[in-house]
Length: 214
Image 1 (tube, rainbow, N blue to C red):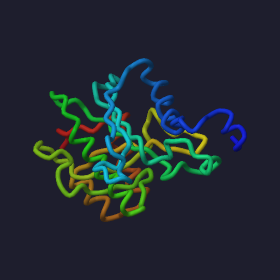
Image 2 (image 1 turned 135 degrees about the horizontal axis):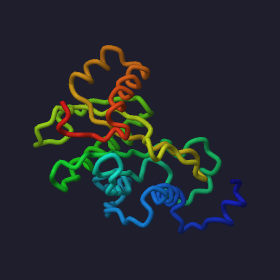
Image 3 (image 1 turned 90 degrees about the vertical axis):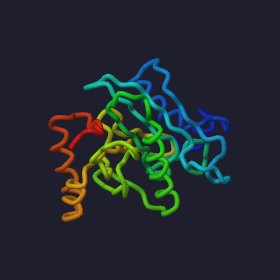
Image 4 (image 1 turned 90 degrees about the horizontal axis):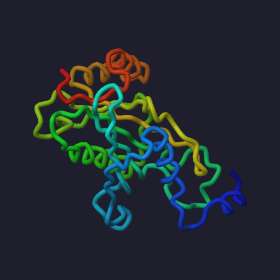
């Protein structure tokens, strides 16, 4: 899409990238209205949370789980200077699939995603498929879980999209144990993370994070 086509298709009020993300989710969830959590004050103006928004969908694929999707790592709004870029801003949005554990609490997961966003925004470093990172505590504080880190993989359902501002990969967070984290630190190559996630995927194709997994 060139500048002329961009101007004909969109105007300055359009959330161009945001709408592309939502359109991709609509293909999976149809008319389901997600829970949406937005920012009252943008991070750039002193707001607490870096991400512009987080949507939470209810999925029954494989097993009942929450499917969280971020809005904010990619270029969300009208921007003539960013058309035809290879990647939209950081080039990804985060997703997180969480098995329902008998409660509806997903705020811990949103906090985790916001903390990862602070790391990206403050450091300028970004995530790619098969990266991993420790969370320096259980991923859900106050819950008896062995998961103490996160690995990243392309979301099995969402994959990636091409937007007028460039490509956006949907990177799914997958909770990992201390044993698995130690294994990756011993040989921190992308191939090792890929191998670990492929092993987990044998019995868990959507790589849904189960806080009770040992």
